[in-house]
Image 1 (cartoon, one colour):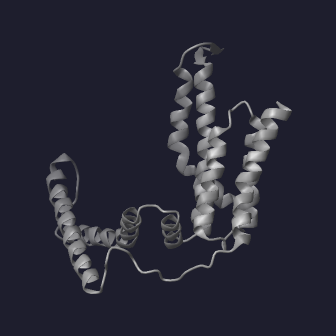
Image 2: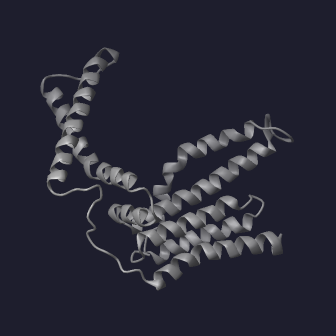
Image 3: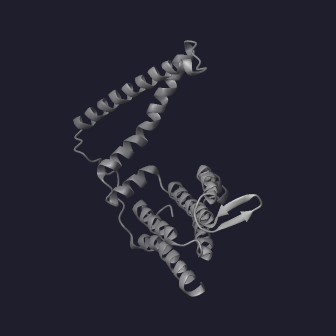
Length: 239
């Protein structure tokens, strides 16, 4: 998985997720197979399943939202104790949890097996607008710079005896945020002028070119093809 070009991996994951989203919840065997595929990819990529599960905890806020969906809906209801739940809401909530979990896990596998720079180059090869790719590249490059600048400003305020304690201190924090924005804007202007002086014409230079290999293309397409085959069998033969 680590050697496969990023554009192949991104395209394969998007196709896989399209198949997952198109699968109705009634085909529960398909969802079992999808999770099996994900865990097999995790093992092949030599990634700890525990690490995958821990990083998947990022979706907990969305799961909490999904738990509220059974209380809203139309049509038939189900009584569980004192609670009245709508069947459509239950189906929608379970569908959101399953499909969201699969999407999060596939995104984690992509980010774990591919560097951020490779992902951006892969998106550019997939014909994502170059401007968007460059914006994402600069954001990735300078987010730590802006974070360090913010930390230095915090240390400077603390050294002068400032400690935020309530609404009355929001004015100071607002001024600090404005100063940080101006510094970041001025830094961006200086970086842009430096790039122009070095021959920047609207596209970033390619550090290295990866020769496409049909072997990697076949491996990448195998995953969505397998998912499609499973869901077709589950929908038209087993069900």
